[in-house]
Length: 395
Image 1 (cartoon, rainbow, N blue to C red):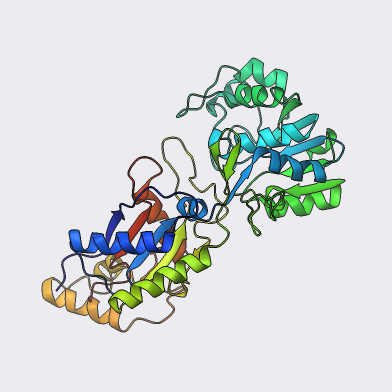
Image 2 (cartoon, one colour):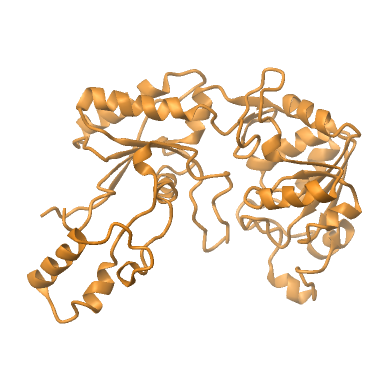
């Protein structure tokens, strides 16, 4: 009997630059790791590649000027109402705001409070009670916000984002007025030129403003095609983009399908084994200290091979041990549970024996595992190799 279940390895690769042969780099790195560690490549192993290196290799970048061209074309009078920017971040949002400012003369920016859609706090939420503020109904304008919360800084970054964003916009010779309200209707009191800037609530918000505003777009409508030679993402536009330089953003990858299929085919050619491959971005987990929900990308995995479709269909071993087989122990208990696994229904949805398992998409679970493994810093492992993920107690 095997004594090890799922094994996850971060795979070191060379530093990946624009127009590198990513398929060759990933395959060579995995094959070299399998020889050096060593481990044997098997059917149903999983290779994860972070979306950043996929976008870098395909050269999917855009400049602030190129984004500004698209903004200027859509908001011709130079007034833009940005609604619910997510996340409130230098890395994710600062260059988008810079581009809007470069294309505009006035910005009204309505922000969620006390935190944005994914949990980035503008201030300590306990201060709401201290100042007798009801976040479900109260609108706080900029002067009042500065009076009450102007000294507050982000728990991890140490940044006062209102000051940071205001200076960034003013440096582009543009005015900005911040409005703090959780009511989507509030922005319409200031402008009816709307740019929905949230990630996960964007579809519902866009539908509302299409009926109530004069101009309504989302970030997924900006750079969803190439502008003046820019990179783009046809499905998500600027969503999932990251700061590359002070004047350039890296877009969410556009052409990942050929990468995942190319890696799968090459591994099959070299080893005779069929591995699954996915491109992953942010994991879908929440930090219990900073209260940040990590997922600031539009999806965890934008590209994956067909073997990663669906959800787990697993039995809760603890439930069987504590209930149906409560009187069994040792080999007798192990044998009974193995028999349950071998004969389980193909769809355990709603069954008691599956309660407490994880009813989520495989790609969300595996992508989160990859993101936690590779991190976003200096580990140098943009590729993750997973073995035994689909194994069970009977293997």
